[in-house]
Image (cartoon, rainbow, N blue to C red; front, side, top):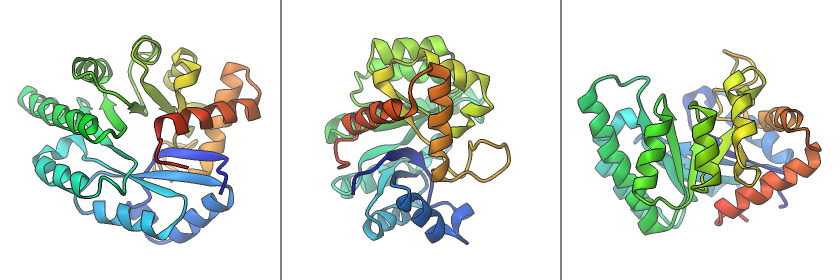
Length: 252
């Protein structure tokens, strides 16, 4: 299959898709959209692997929500066990929006560093969650000399993204919420074009607030990014696909 799009970050295993998951997946695959589903809780890791086994065009990333750091050992063990079956580690990282306690933030960072080390050891890309912690996450990644880095749904300053993409070589993915988010629109302009990716983060971050998102909305993200950059949509699609396959070398 020659994919036209790769949704680099979604959550197909989540309960929001329980009643129509097969139809959502079929619609995406029929549109030549491949997907990386990010399973980030212990009760969803096996579901992610099962989706990859069932569908040609679904790839799995295994991670851990930053607030669930107490499951770190289990996550690391699972990732090592299934390292040949997954395309990346993540999402993992820092969440300073939901976590205000400094001791808990320190614990998140400790666990984050372990996942970065693991990604280097296994030679796998790492998907980063950095809600209200963009600069801190980038600083930690840089300090650890992280390799193939994918900043997912980055909500930090565009200046941080500019430096991280151009000087550190980190990739940044844009979700369909770019149509309604001035912050994401500024982000598009800041990212090095060769480090630009697309995601949906389904079931959230869709074009309409409060409406369940799905992988087919990757096209909405492309349309808006094309408009912002003043680039031909098909030309931009090809560039983004090249970027994605450069980062996710296990996808072919």
